[in-house]
Image (cartoon, rainbow, N blue to C red; front, top):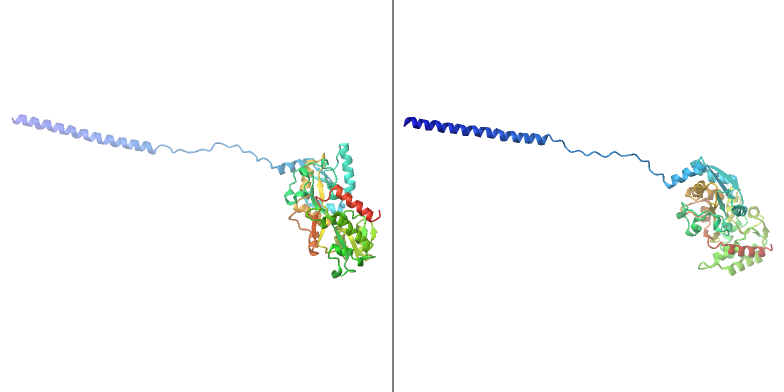
Length: 384
């Protein structure tokens, strides 16, 4: 019995030992698996983003850069204007400084001669000018088919009616016309202060008129008109009364009568060039001034690029410079003109303001028919 009990006890101890052994081997195995899993997770490399290789592409040149490159390749631009060579050199200084590789050839030519030459060259199919400045009284009578239609870079700074159809021209700078008096012979208090004052018989024997004032009747027809209508009959009657009451002496051109006025030969120039008057006043110190009659007129000059211009890109570059703020102010001060650019301030503009004078631009009114009507009347009035 004791043997049997002992055997049972020994057998039970063996089973317990076996169970204990199995428990120890299971725990480390589970621990090893966890460590392996942890080790595997920690050793996995992090994902990285690599940008795809890029190819460097030069930016496309702007339209202006392309124009400048083409103009430099042409290397030349031919300009026709009525300015003297000295005046033109002042006007073009900024352009030649900005584009030293473009040679500027200049021809000083009157508006009328330029118009005739342009018309002749166009008929022959050979144009020699690239940029031409023409007085509005001539430009507005010529067929617009003679000019290149283009986009003017500075057109937004000018009145809408300054731009020709399709951009064929841009009116940009104007000579101005007005009665002018001698400040030594006529005290300021006795100077004409309205257009009606020009008719005063007190000017009899003291007044002068010029054959060049062919647009005078158109100017007063516009000034006296209402609602955009030209008052031709009132204008004609006005000038007939002026000549009847004052009996002015007749001179040719604008320079001679202005100089005679400044020299004291006359007290009043009934209708003269503001440019000439202000030039003589500032440069020759002549005692002359525009009469403060309120409103005066100006027929603007314009720029064109003729069709078939030999250097069209250089022409476009120069035309845009001349109508820019910098370009137009330099020209206005050199020529004593009034710029139409909305941001421009000039010497002439300041002088007009001092006299209380306002400009009426004759852009729509200066048609071939109206200019001829005014010119014919003036010739008859002067007995020419």
